[in-house]
Length: 247
Image (cartoon, rainbow, N blue to C red; front, side, top):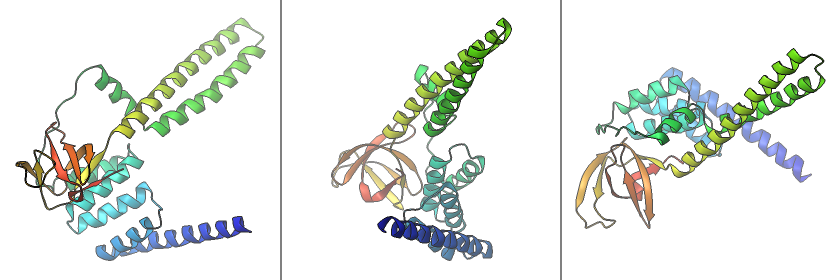
């Protein structure tokens, strides 16, 4: 009985979430962006989320010229769908509204080469690729085992070798990307003006100033303070209520 009740409540939540999503889309088309935001945000409060939801929410904030929420939600959408060109394109437009123009320090070395390859897909996609080729390897092995001619055996053997290679690459890439994802702590500046301190104390000297919409990376946590790093590798301390972490 409890399982049936749980399924009923889950189905109800999905139904209302879908209704709110469609309502938000309709409001957006009418140009009522504030109400569209309210509709999309109400879905997030139910712990339902998707790349499309964050993308539509970001578009609404962008129309309202709200820099930080627009960039934040585009980034959230990109985390769920990292290869979507439309999300990337709109994120670039939103970034142009931000005041800070920080150039990323170019990365070099073997680690950078590996990440350029593995970042093509997220860790889930790499894992599914490995699983898919595992089934392919099994089918090729069956074909090899039951082949009656030397030529077919060679073809199936080469196919098994290629499938095994892809499985190994897929597993290693999934592990690598998972580690990068877990260690990476991106955040968006939500404060209109955010002083970055040399130490985690409010009376310490300002190292520099950031503005809303800027993306930073959290390195350390100390009570209400966060040590951050910019894409140009500049570091400093900020109060936690001035930024919003993406994960």
